[in-house]
Length: 260
Image (tube, rainbow, N blue to C red):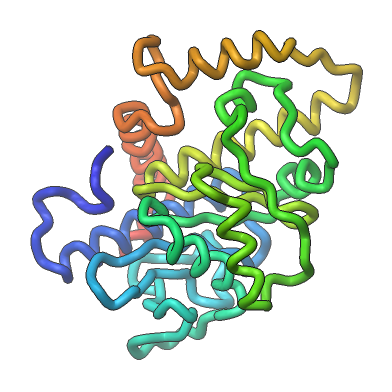
């Protein structure tokens, strides 16, 4: 797995600049693939170092407006740590701060409120094994029951426990969450979790066919085994990096101001 910033980057300022560009690209991609909720939700990335600082979207900007320089730097409580013309919505950082604090591998955390994601989050059985994309997450999804708007700091312990070591989580009656060791990995995971939810909602408009538990388990082993052609699609650094490079080219073509 590649690091959050290029190996050629050496200074903390260069690392932060690199992360700002990648995170701004992530926001543009979420807007491009229509996974936004007006000015709400967050994608956060942890900055290296002992200060527990994070980059986050400024409150009030739509994802399609976010640039590398407009991202705000916050502490573990979601408070600004350096001057910015923008404000931050600290209440929305409750979920992110909980995950960042508990998971060493959760360098990037993304949370969405999409129509398909919220629809699946409202279903008793959650994500069903109705597609190959859904089977990428077979037995690898955490579930967290709805407790109201995530303002209560005491909820963080339960969020952490429900996520466990899973790469993604469905927040019941709320939305989707994915973590990644890199920005690229977090994007890859939330994109395919969202796509699996879209397929499920579409399939439920008619009678569905569900693979047997044996086929689900077999496919899961195929998708996660390093000996298969594709390998573990959620964790394979080569696949993730190829996908992220393609997505960066998309952003460069369509939204070149993201780096400003």
